[in-house]
Image (cartoon, rainbow, N blue to C red; front, side):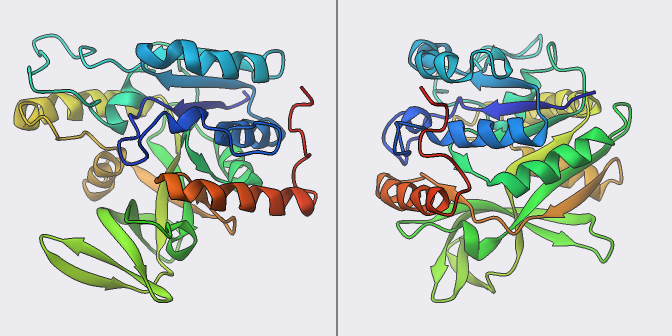
Length: 301
């Protein structure tokens, strides 16, 4: 069975200041997700499920439907605040989405096969998609055996501000031991550092990190549902609390309810966390085009 790719594109992009999912970065008007889907198709993905909000549907589909029509099967699901389990309601103060864990949970009715997950605004590179697809082709859809593509931390930092990353601890066999969501990581010379409760902590820059590039089986929906209900009971009244995938997966690993293989990639990540990141992303893509990695006009439109 060919794998499905789930693309999380419902984020508001508050630090970026706009709808960065559809902001062109390529020489022929390509957006970041164009390159990801191009690489995913080359790696063998035959279906893409976009998670979006209804208020961005028209603008998003105006680009996506034209670029991908006839190239890959496309479905949409909507991450809405009121898409909650029975017995729960949206607090009046809540404005932002519930987080990446909730986003994936929104796919449970249409994704029934092993699937990959990525962010819409991250450039992952061809090798990363090949690693992801390779794992998924051998995945047992009934098993709690997952994977994440691990990037080297220093290759994922922005020159223009702090970023959030899931910093991974990996054992000798390549399995995830723990994942710590660090919400404020920034460059520190050739290394990095992160802030936690007002104190700064050093990182070497060599740490493997998650960029939300995951491989899951449908079993994940069962545990996400269970954990999301608990999250709502404990933190549902906090308007800023988010139900995050790394936190959920870390708990599964800690409780020995799942195994997660870390698939290393040598690819360089590009991202548009801040507006000032866009020129660097565009320049990075131009370099890859010059090396023959991508055509000048990705889709020939």
